[in-house]
Amino acid sequence: METYEGYPIMPGIKSEILSSHKIKVKGAILYRVQVEDKIKYVCVNAHTLRGRNIVIIPSFEGNEDANLVEIWRGQNGKFKYDFDIFPGVSPQHIWHRNQFDLSRLQKIDEITENVSIVKLADHTRTFIAKVKVVEPEEIDLETRIYGLLRKTRITPRFMGHICEGEDVRGFLLEKVDAIAPLAIDFDACKRVLQTLHDYNWCLGKVTKDNFLIQTDGTAKLIGFGHCKTCSFPAGRRQWKLERKMLQELETLRRLFKQ
Image (cartoon, rainbow, N blue to C red; front, side, top):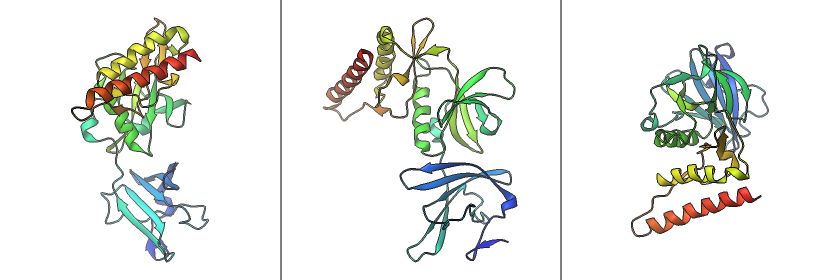
């Protein structure tokens, strides 16, 4: 078995790096790695590999149930690592019956770092896929909100969860034929925002990018990564709830006056 500074590591021929993602809070890099027939995650803290241009992957032998290994340098400069479970979407928020394998999605175009236009192997239609490996709590929150709003028709249709191995890492949406909102679309955008408020949730960060205008003039609401619940302890709940909602509606009004 190959070793690095006396520790067992995975042979390069048995692993393939699929992607890398910066973790802003820790100044680390998270690597998605194909290890034989499984996906593993390697979190490399800053200054750990001392300028090496290859990623050292500690052997998962004896820790097969783990899917994450974090590596770093101790205060004495010694190489250290620890195994853990890298979470996906919480099981209680997995509500749709459809699940799509991330590896089977064909990327057609990239909208942002985490959002792409994709095709399925057995479909000619295109869809919108959002996958976020780092900060999985954002995908967890958005998945929860889409489930909450699934009967309102104010969002693009939620087609199902995107999985990698046994974990949910994203979701698939219908691709809506829509345009960015104009000044005349204020009322349509206000209506869908108020519908979200009716469920005691606020967007948290309101921008025009949260709204898609369809050909019939109605709006769809997207982008729930900053959502915050508007539920508060009894006695203060109603006042704080109404205040937060009014603030979001006023922000929306200002956006359409610009």
